[in-house]
Amino acid sequence: MWDDPLCDVASDGGECLALVWEQDALRDLGNSNALFVKSQVYSQARDAIGNAALGAAFSTLTWPLTLISLADAIDGPWSIAMNRADKAGAVLAQVLSQRVHGHRPVTLIGYGMGARVIITALVELAKMGKVGHGIVETAVCLGTPYSASSHLWERASTVVSHRLINGYSEKDWILAFVFRSSSFSSISVAGLQPIAKTNPSNAVLENMDLTSVVGGHFAYREKLSLLVQVMSPIEGRERMSSSDVCCKFS
Image (cartoon, rainbow, N blue to C red; front, side, top):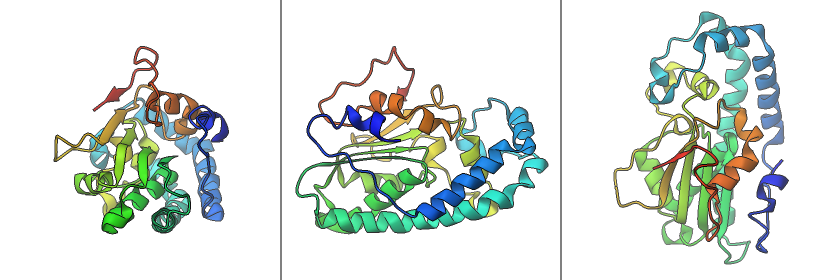
């Protein structure tokens, strides 16, 4: 899946590695998602919601009762995957801090749960102080099921030397749906909205509005090659022209 999107950005002699983690939990989540999107209830709910841009207003949305009836099918696997993603992120931070890759700069790219692994790892590196600095050059998080807390993202940006990108789509209503419960009602979601900067001079943290390109959570995988070209995560490479793809940077 990652071969084509990253073959160009890794053609400068760097290594391109894929992190394999909790395959059973991710497979269960994938199967649940597949059943979810194939159901008639899903189609009816999607038609009811239409092309609404949810963004930061997702917590105020009234979900169709027919869709809520399918909640158990996806809530369990999703919660397990998030928990495992946090643990994988902590382990990734430990491995990176040990510099088993040497002293070469590291670029991390992920979407969905993979993006949660990345942002968790960055927060863990930030907790390590100086040990966690000078390792990650660029980190790209797309459709991240993680809090949009300015404090957490700005803390994560302190261990990134070049760019920390939050790619989001305001039409990712599946991501909004899994965060709909009361336990998450007060939490803003990074994959749905920009991260507010408390420090305007923070040039590392970037927001990329992908709403015009990514129409839903599953579109990240379909558009992965295009998105990597747009972001140009490797330092020194030019981004695709804004006239080719309409994305907003902030």
